[in-house]
Image (cartoon, rainbow, N blue to C red; front, side, top):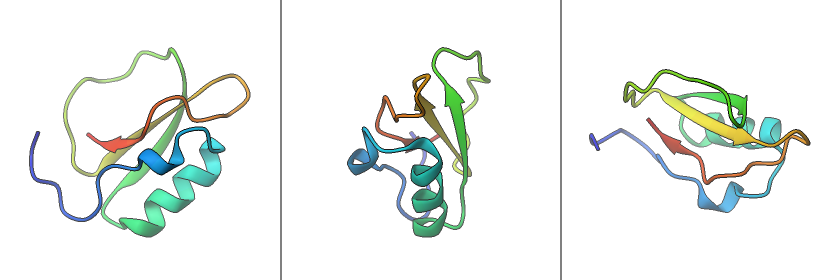
Length: 69
């Protein structure tokens, strides 16, 4: 994994609301764009320090600890 600037892992958001998690992530690291996506949704596999995927279930609850990439 590349060295990404700022905070790049948010285990404390596991189980949180996805939209609220996105706001927290973008506030804590303004270098990233937090993208909320329903699991399973096909996504690009390229690694990018400026992107955080937030995987949520049908109820909008975060399923995996968000991380940059």
